[in-house]
Image (tube, rainbow, N blue to C red; front, side, top):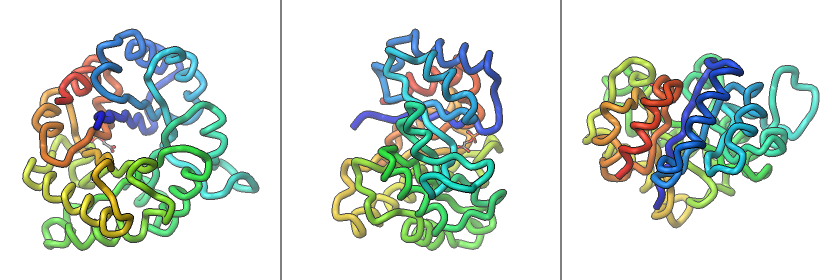
Length: 246
Ligand code: PGA
C-alpha cells in the first residue's frame, strides 16, 4: 500500500507561497516516487496549485465541502466544484470544523457522502480531545465518530481515515506510537466490521507531525500516511516527512 502524505494548510498561505511550494514539490520527482502527496490549501488557491503541479503526480484537495451539489449556501463550496477544479481529495470532519462550525457526525457523514458522489476521496477525520483521553473515553469517542461519520458507500478503496488526537494538533505534542497503533487498529477493526474489508484502508495519523518525528510515526503499525498541518507550509520540512515514509 502506498503511503499518503496530505498537507492541510488551514487558513494559511498566499498566491505566491502556494505557487512556490507546489512547484517545489512537483519538481522533486523523488518525493512523488516515495509516496502519494496531496495539498489541501485554502480553496481560492486551488487553481494556482493545479497549474503548478500539472504534469506531476502531486494531487490536491479541499479542506471541507458542503453536502449539497449546489444551491443557496453562501460561502460554502460543493464537492462537485472541487472535482471540477481537479481535486482528488477533500478533508471532512476536521476537529477545527467540528469545533468552530458545530459539525456533528451526521453532518460529516453527509459531506463525505457528497464527496464520494462527486468522485472525490474523502479524508474523514476522527480523534479525541484531551479531556476525553484523560477520562478514558478515547475508544468510545472513536467508535462513535466512526459509526456516525462514515457513509454507507465508503469502502477501503474510496475513503481515507485520519486519526488526529485533538490535543496533538498544532501543539507540538504527539501521541505515543503505542497509542497511535492502538487507535489505528481500532479504526481498522471498526471499518472491517462495518464494511467487510479494511486491509487496503489508508489510515493517516495527524497531530504535530514534523520532519523530526515522522520516521517513527510512519513506521508505526497500522499507519499508512500522515495529515500534516503546520509542517506542510514549509517545503523542506514537508519533503522530509515524505522521504521518511518506510
Ligand atoms: P498540525 O495539524 O500538523 O499543525 O498539528 C494537523 C491537522 O490539523 O491536520
